[in-house]
Length: 114
Image 1 (cartoon, rainbow, N blue to C red):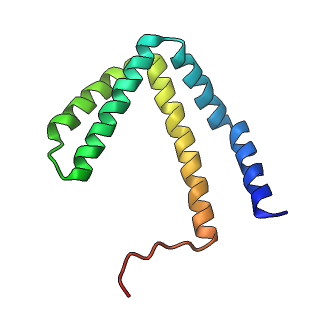
Image 2: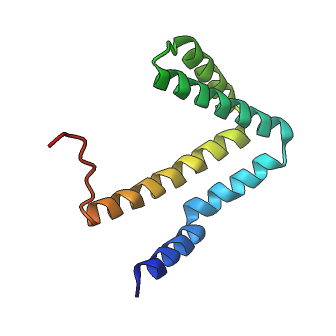
Image 3: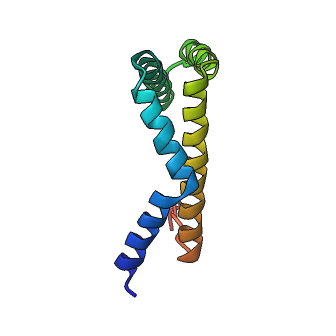
């Protein structure tokens, strides 16, 4: 079997995984409630803002505090909390698979000058 066939098989397996199915269901539930969907969009926008400030070397304390406040509000909403938890479980699965592949091919990003 060639590597592309295996990659497609892995993608199908991920599509059928419990973690992905729960994430997909939670995402569809969020889409049914415009208010909760807006809360999620606001949370994501603030996360991006904090990341951009951090990357640019600018102070993030105020934006980070605002993000924490939004997150605390978000997790008090059961639909949004379920979505975020499902998203995290799928992200962990996906990261684990990436790590397995990277270790399997001994992929090493060499950042040192030779």
